[in-house]
Amino acid sequence: MLHRSLTRLWLVAIASLPIALANANAQQQDEVWLTKGGAGARSKGVISAVSKDAVTLEISGIARPFPVNEIARVLFAGEPSELNSARNAIAQRNWSLALTELKKLDGQTFSSRYVSSDVAYYKALCQARLAMTEGGDKGAAQTALFDWVRGNATSHHFYDAAETLGDLAVAAGDFAGAAKFYNGLASAPWEDYQMRGNIAVGRALLAQQDYSGALEKFEAVIGSPISTQEATAQKQYALVGKGNCLVGLGQADEGLTLLNDLVSKNDPADVVLFARTYNALGNAYLKLNRNKDALQAFLFTDLLFYADAESHAEALYHLSKLWNEVNKSDRAVQARNTLRERYSGSIWAAKE
Image 1 (cartoon, rainbow, N blue to C red):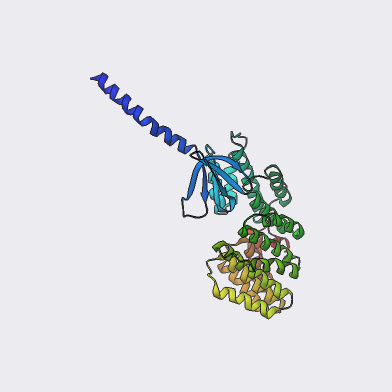
Image 2: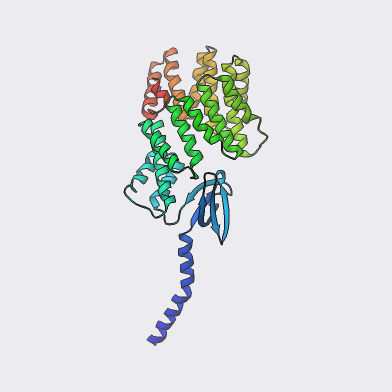
């Protein structure tokens, strides 16, 4: 009887072994998560190649390249859980939490060069973003990220790293240097990335008051024949830039009409678009010496669209000046304190 029971258990164990092995192999596969297809849209396989333009998965013996502009994230077989926890925090723009997770991996070695590269990249990214917001050594952050790029020029993070280096340069007031980094993003082979790059270059030129040069970049985006959802969104951001340029070129009425039209025709759920638009309106009113209208425009950003950190910092800077003009010194102090406490690393805090 005992012999028969043991035999039965043995047969069950043997029968379930292929399933267990299959599950184990599945857990050890690399994963490419996609930007389209809804939550959970991903492909699994073994990464056979990575470049700045694509990640290639071997799926059932067939090599399938995934363009970087269609990738939300890449997970590597056997990677530490802290790495993906950091990715989740980064998706929420919680740079401090992400860096805390990544620091748990200090001193560890990884069998996969892809994992080592990802850990180093996200550390440098978090240091850069913290330096631009909460404060930190921008020079050290730029060096760390630039060194990573030099050692990982074929990484799928290349274009995002170039954009972040440009943002760092802007935060340090180096607008000419920022344009050079943004041109790296504009060199990507996809229209939506090229649009992002041109808008970023345009914004850097705008900060230098090169209105004609900036307008050329924005017009290139607006005039693109591409009409995907991503391209349409980029065109709206370019229109904000164009509005700024028109005001700077002395065409204030036309610029104001364009910017107010953006507000009336778009969804305020697009926080970045509305924050940039209201700030552009505020700057236009300042040029026209309509300071009360400027205050109201910047106040919209402060109260409703503060989730866009860069725009919020800009609005707070202007509010810290404009509240005094309407005898609201307490509000001015509050705006100044919020700017210093929340965005001490921004270029706007440095202007105080």
